[in-house]
Length: 414
Image (cartoon, rainbow, N blue to C red; front, side):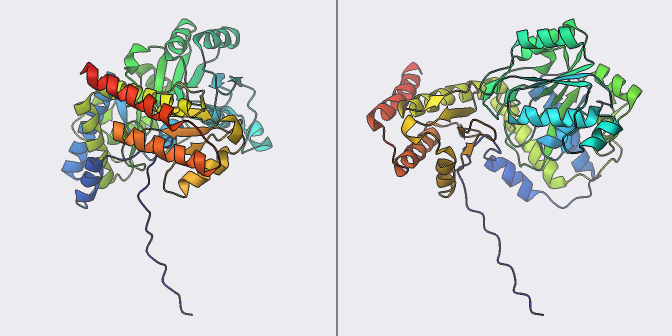
């Protein structure tokens, strides 16, 4: 039998203006491509891992010894963070969008008894888990957290810091304070906020586990390392109860990063095979974060999000988000209900915006690593043309004025 060779896969360069993955920095790609094929226990690879660990502590703003990267995407980091949740553990999970909803599913799977899991293995109902559903487009407030923890008195509480499903920033200060007050161990999904928001995790003592991802604020390749950080109390609890995972075991994985018995050591021990390419790329991404400073990055995101927000509102869109790296909007009335059509139209032109993944369907436009006036203007121009292509209309003069006013004021201030 003759097999026709498959053609080479050519993926076009896309303006990735969605909630993530973001546009990887060229310096990161260069480090990835320039790395030699090295033994994963080679001295330079291990040195790079030690330096990544040290840089992560700076980026995350923590003295937690158990701060390192989990090989994989953000879901790998989240799975590790939830590792100590055992069957019958009482958990309160706050849900206000798609991704906190998936976090809730993870929690229900881990806390479910064998009987509960067998009843519906893909979507179990765990009696020990309480889901606090906050309507789409609204934030989780400290008052909501306080009331739930006071009523249910769980062992664990979990929340997304920034929920990209609906573009909402949740109250991390109120969450931490309520967890501390009620002696609850807080767990936070920081997939969308790390590297974008200006915060230090040690400022939130009620939170004992943090998990993020490499492909959003850190701007690294999607399959490198998901940052995690755990307090000593979290690790002590894990030692006491154990966990039903090997690959994503926080203590075992930490050993490969040179963290043994709660201390940094000169050389880690093998847990899984790490990639020299991934270590080099992750290392460079963290170097960039530190060079630019988290405070400067956060200010830049806030500044450019304001410009994009003003421009799409001038087109007649209603913005319902409050995240500095993502705009979530309703289309003008004449195009209501055609959100998916508009998104697919944009994607066909290598302009990668996204719909929301739950009801109501909205449009999401992200600016990860797209922090220049020229790029924001390009996004606005492409989005405006897509609206016109679908038969919509708006005052271009008002849009131009919104952008020019925003950026001209900044130049004048300098």
